[in-house]
Image 1 (cartoon, one colour):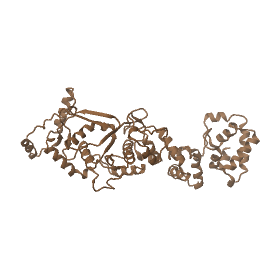
Image 2 (image 1 turned 90 degrees about the vertical axis):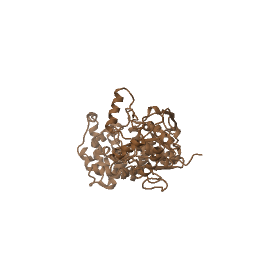
Image 3 (image 1 turned 60 degrees about the vertical axis):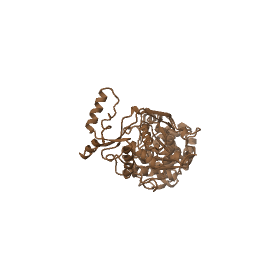
Length: 479
């Protein structure tokens, strides 16, 4: 019987919620909920220079928008495990660093950054893999005391054991091992008294009873350093799972400088993507369900999720697939909900003051089934807000057929018989039917001339609806 599952997502407040971070949070959340466990949000805020104002709030807000709600966080603490921000836990780290110093597993290092840089360059030039040369490892207690009394700044380093193999079974990658020879004596506490990531994360995970850790593959090389601390303190390590990279369509790692893909969850929110569609799409980035089904709601994903089906190969962020998933969710929404989604974008782009609420609703209805995301509506409906008719060469060529002027003249006369109040989709459709009879035009030779003459395009949404939305006056002048 597994202990109660406790997993965590622990971002730095140095930026907003990135797609990679959101996927990490999502897989931890799905795993926890699948096993009726707890999902914890913790903050690694020790990189003080890089922390941004509102970074924590932005992370929590965007997780909430996605439907990833932490069971514990700085805003919802469990007194047994609080605090949840590393800068509020410095006394906890001090307690354990003192134990490591006392047991001889760690030592104070007085080397200056300049000395360390010079040694690093010397090793690189000699073709040696750079690591700390242990200059301070064997200082006597008297030498350490003298340096401290002289006020020399120091870091605290771990004394890496010789000849050890650190190995573990990764939930995704299987058996992984590292040799201690390849790891230099790394820094546990910086000169400013703040712990490094690899030390603090072990203390936090242990003190918070974290049972499983899902994180990006870039953390794989950190694992032996962390296992070292677990062993020195006599603790059991959590079970690790290192997720593969997310790559772009060129199969290159998704980097924050990549302009081809929006990188942050807030950008998708601003473009009018739906949160449940994003939740669904991101679950498919590195995880696959049992069967062929790809559209799952929140609860179904929790039920279906299995760590055994996490992928070993990189997952591609496919923008077209995201649009397809989001379109499936938009189709399921009521027209009222889709109008609410589109309205802010329409209001920004166009002057709607001359149009009724019903007109806007009819306009959105025409595109309801093909809409991929909210902002896309702006481009789709542009023809309804243009005064000048733009007709491309192919359409102009088509309009040279000699039967067309008569077809358009008949259609125009039918529309002229309609009063403004009767200018409805059904009545316009009846006029098209009557034109078919009287002008003896059918199929492409009926619909396409009418479409080109009224909207300027050869193919488009429902013709009668389009004519109704353009309005009687504009359509007659164009005809």
